[in-house]
Length: 391
Image 1 (cartoon, one colour):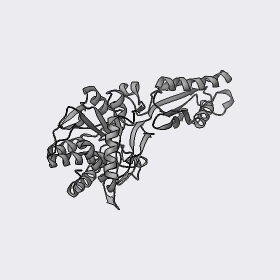
Image 2 (tube, rainbow, N blue to C red):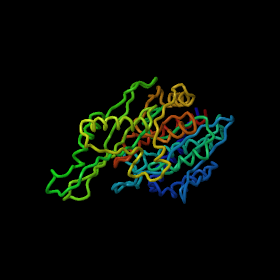
Image 3 (cartoon, rainbow, N blue to C red):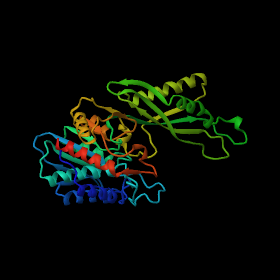
């Protein structure tokens, strides 16, 4: 088995640190995209920038293989902002870990894929399948990068979405339907609350429903086990003035969906419950807005939203990844259904490409101020990617 040299292990470590040190919050990805394109060029891998909008571009690269088949490795270059983390972009190394924003989500995975491709170029080997590498922008917000990738198409028969899974092989994940529920009241002077209807109070039974039914629609998926949808109320706002009985209250709810559930199903589910409140209280007034998130403005993502995805554990890409994992790790991998959403949704549901989610890093560290990646796990992931690329 061809493996990663010690020189390329060092290259990967430094590459991860360098990319973490380049701030790339959604909307400001130009520097990181240009850097990745330049790095690929330096190591002899043909690539191009795919314009998404303005100066925001996806990076697309390719190594030709022996057969007509292609395997895609996909990741995103943007991160969430520092969010008050002073050392977010230092990329410091400490006790075998690289720290910083994007170290887990997901510049380390990108470094692993680039290092694996570099190893192929330097080995003068031709992979069985062509290797396609795609880095998208805007994953953390409105998904404009993956929309563009889908719009222009990808020549691939199988794919790896390189999101962090702690080296578990994800064969599916939940979708998400963001919902705003609004209750109505009657505004009056705050000194006479009995003369009005407080919309914040009328929200109480709604909140109790979501709290009680946070886990909903348990179903069994073949090869996975029980999966279920969830509710989480993430934001609440109400009223215009401290001295006025509020006549409106809004909550934003994250409904995580399982395969087969749609935004229409979620609307019917919520409205069915709200109607039962109105049956008991004819004055109860509400509105439901599906696929509404405070940070979504772009009509395309508002219309589409996030879909759940699952592929068969018998797909070739699952067998390929499992075989590579066993060669590197000496044991069988854990096959998982993931709680979080990834752009594998678009690859499977829009392009019909069987896709696994697989990468280094603990998902729970993503978006935190303890975001860090194990250098040992980077090396394992790169070796597995390399074996998969060589087929």
